Image 1 (cartoon, rainbow, N blue to C red):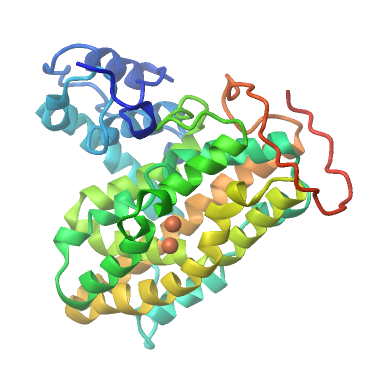
Image 2 (image 1 turned 120 degrees about the horizontal axis):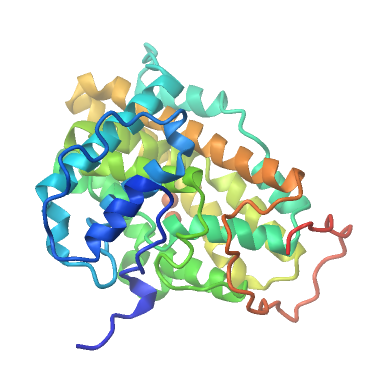
Length: 364
Ligand SMILES: [Fe+2]
Ligand SMILES: [Fe+2]
């Protein structure tokens, strides 16, 4: 049998980050079998959202429901003892998320107004402004490597909502997802546009190529979507997450594109970001009013879940942004070692607009 196309997965199994992920990685290298019944029992790390071992263990389990892992028996996806371990990890993760954001109350004006309030109150660190104005090439490449974990499968976690919905919310979600998947054209799929950005920046474009260097907080931004996406009971949270995502996308994406232009990159590198400036200005309206509003009109009891999902997405994204900015401020890489492969970046020959020199990077 020929090797699968690396661009589309499955990814290579990552390196373990602690005893739990080591046990899972080791198990996955063999045919499906029972895991020790006490694996992960009593687990409660000090900070589950930034715990490397917990987040990688969750990511290992979740990926079995996306593209799987290279060389790993596909029957692991439904192996009961692995699912039981995943459930133990999920309880810890979900409890931490609920502690982080509490239970947002639904305003009288409705769920769309509640989403707008949450987004307006989001005072996250200025990651987009830094990438636009000051980040050097090394830092921008780090940001892109982090985000590749999601963008190379962009929209997939939210697609899990589709079979769980009917009526107006489903129709509206299909409208958004159709755009995300390029209206059926491979070269317009957002994941493919992002692959071009990776390529232009000289980074590995393979599916899951940067998992090993992605720290826990980056994996947590992904695990959050998988947790919401894989549990029908959390469908409200999944759609709230999507709405918050779309409502906080347009302006930052303009800034990311401008940051790449400042660094001298061409429109092939910036297309992914440029595309989102226009698309997400539309998507945010559809997501808040038609998807989330449509869901709550049919299932009013899900309104607070919608706001929980949105608040959790915004909160974990704030932690992600703080991690990058704090690392850079301290002169450290925001990635785990090893750094992405040092391929010369494909900087365009288009002259970059004159700007002040970017701050020198302390990163190698
Ligand atoms: Fe997109
Ligand atoms: Fe979008």
